[in-house]
Length: 365
Ligand code: PHE
Image 1 (cartoon, rainbow, N blue to C red):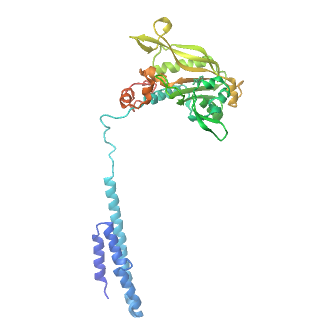
Image 2: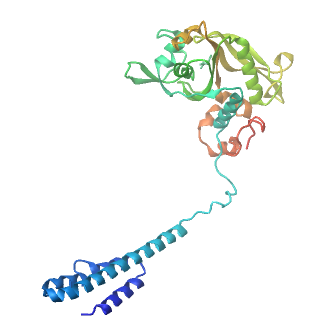
Image 3: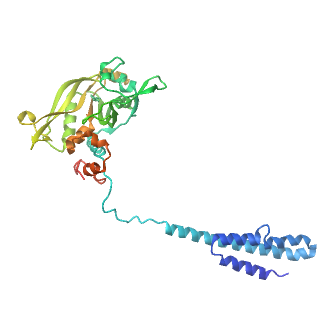
């Protein structure tokens, strides 16, 4: 028998198949269990040996050429399908930005970036710690044992359950626990800032239950109060972008620093508005408290496993929200966290305005 005609027909139908589904239908038609060529193969069994010797190779050759043609056509169709998909799914990365970009950088984020930029220039790196803390890191290791009255001043949010070490769990009331965590992890010397969220049960126009602080910690040899004062002054001048910043240090008390100092910054009154800068003792104006600080208490250094005769340091804690309000002129802290789009677009910053010391750390959008 001559299978040339059968082969020709099969090959031309395969060549005409325009998609993978049609091709699969053809494969089933020719080579499937009930397929025509499979049927021919089955006839071999009924032939006598002589005939089989003649017919066998011809049918096998037919089967082979059809299956080769199917595979080749499948390749072509798959490549075409992929190319079509690639063509339809391209995106044009050269599209221009929308005319009115939506969304702004929140003033808190911007101010945190500004602070990090300034302290990076002074050789500080950024450290972090958990917002869900245990009372050892938040209080005890900072020289506030359980009965210490300063604990009561923090209006702490406690969790109902204790942790695996049977420590009470709480939302950190300040960023100072990051001091302890960093000393325990990295030892000394150290120069870090730790910006982040802190929580206290308190709410009015100048207090929200969640607010932001940035902690600073320097541990080294022969560190003294003069270093602290210079660092704070240098930071505040860079932050407010004014040379006439006047700082007043007042003796204060924090269990984890000794001595402790609170710092006030001078403001002047211009058309009845408070403007940071100038010396209030020489004219109209006044002092505004901006931060707490001091020399790290020897006991805290001991809690961190360091020898206080070898290592000293200073620490400070600054209210970021307060600083943002002073610099950019917002008067109600609660508006920071309302998520009102009008407030955000008014006070927010352009995403492209990355703070730099050469370009100015803070330029409103
Ligand atoms: N943790 C203190 C507070 O929240 C601030 C502070 C930090 C004071 C570091 C001294 C040193 O009020």
